[in-house]
Length: 317
Image 1 (cartoon, rainbow, N blue to C red):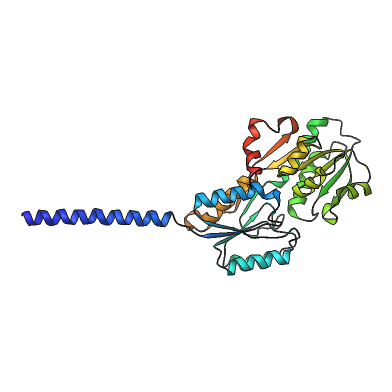
Image 2 (cartoon, helix red, strand yellow; image 1 turned 120 degrees about the vertical axis):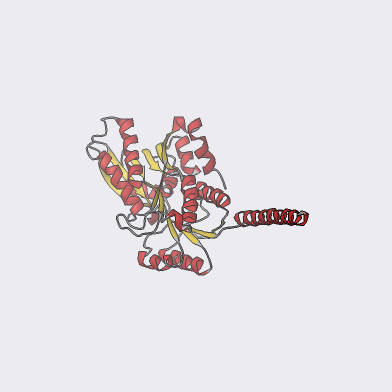
């Protein structure tokens, strides 16, 4: 009987040791890197991506994944971006997050997606087409609408007879066309007249662009790049814009910009990594679209407590 008791005791001890080893092994596995995500952004070193990259890095740390931000130049073409996507896929990336540039082909991306999960940031691949590639982005129509509402708040019913000039980096991309649609729908019954729409990608000198156009009462910049260029010019008509960099907030602070609509790029970066890891887990199903929040900021409230977290993420390297 005593031998049986000793045997059972020994068996129990061995079971406890085995359980402990199993828990250690499980903990070791869960604390290790779970996969590699490559990120491809146009002009990847630009300050406009500071909050986005901070969000990407924080989520990668929390989700225990390896993050690689691919080095790209300012003039990233669709052909070059496609080459980089193919390169990262063939190089063993477990997922690729990218902001598409103008002209990239959905059919080519679909081929990559069969091998490597893809996720689109910010700029949709097509305005109304379901590409079946998950997306993390703000509602661009609402961003444009919010610009119009800010102008209405400042001018009440006094926009009739005013003239408007619209700046953008590229004309024919869904991000810009959708924002423009939201702006125009909001202002269409106010009596304001749009005299011109100009793509600043045609030149880097915003002063030359403005000098060549008819004089207007109000300016709108529909993206961060064009808003940055606008803030480099000290004297402009009253300006409104959509931006997410410290340079554009400087323009707001010194009074060049009357109001700025700021999408939360930290949230966009963080959520994109989380969404990608969910793509790896069949239990979560396929992620379709995640919407990013935004804030409308005016000069007098720029440094208010409400905006401190947003300002912090935009100042990170």
